Image (cartoon, rainbow, N blue to C red):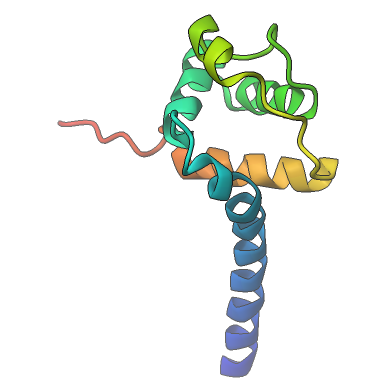
Length: 115
């Protein structure tokens, strides 16, 4: 019984690690040198789109086909830094990376209410 538990935990950790590695390898490594951090981008998306589904869809659409009309960044930022190149990730991997991104920065369920 204990061996099964250990194996199950190992498999679960491996799956979670693989998901976050997609995000770490493909998003964080470039964005850590950017003028606007990933958490600030997340909050911009959250303010504009508000729901998990809408944020994820907007991120996916922008990352697959970036354009001036889809960006959430101000015009001055785009004039200075330009529009990013389309993501080279597969649809499946891009969705996994967006899921990890959402889980990392979501505020829902993390806010504490004083009684």
